[in-house]
Image 1 (tube, one colour):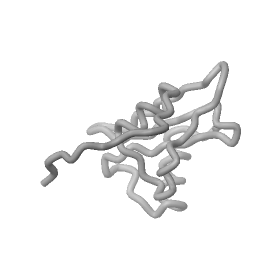
Image 2 (cartoon, helix red, strand yellow):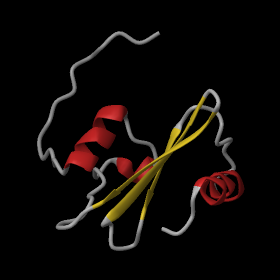
Image 3 (cartoon, rainbow, N blue to C red):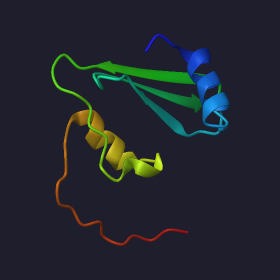
Image 4 (cartoon, rainbow, N blue to C red):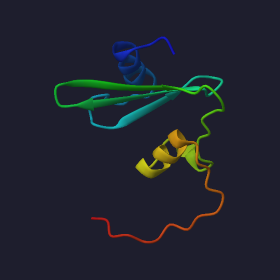
Length: 94
């Protein structure tokens, strides 16, 4: 968790073959899952959010095997809420 803006954006470019300035939010966890960093590009520059837990761990949702999270799944993971049974209602998408 020593990397900052340049190191994390380089990691996104090299390892994930993604463009770090495309507006996506990239999530990084340490091995013990006690620290989380979110890298996001906004017009004008990068934003880095960092949270360290004093107790407990971040638990990614079980359906996170694709490597992509929805915004609501990300918020639940950061807040430490685990949903064991849920039903997602159909919504309009273009």
